[in-house]
Image (cartoon, rainbow, N blue to C red):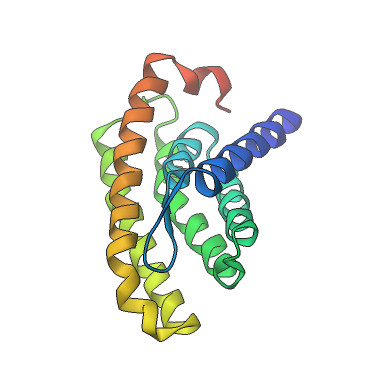
Length: 165
């Protein structure tokens, strides 16, 4: 079972990296990506292991994309956005991926994203703190929409029961 957990965690880290690094839209001082939606899904499918997958996948995307100064903040923020979904995973292991609860968790994780990067910008370069907020709000909202669409598709394909722990 441990080998399966590591393998699936690695797969999620790789997919999160791809959805973050290769599929992105540039904004003022960074980019909007789809990786967060995969962190949400991963958290509901593989539980706490998705915290590691999200931190690794998006941290590496920052490093590979020349945003090295944001990598430490990204690792922390992406670990934190997974936690609300992991709590649902622990409580309701046998439910569908898309429920009212999971849809609402995207709002909580969105606030963590916007607030986390605002704080990171205050530390890294205060001039970008306010400028980055609209891009981070769009990032959070886009991730919520993509999560909902993917969760519907994954529920229809019964993915959670096929690869979940």
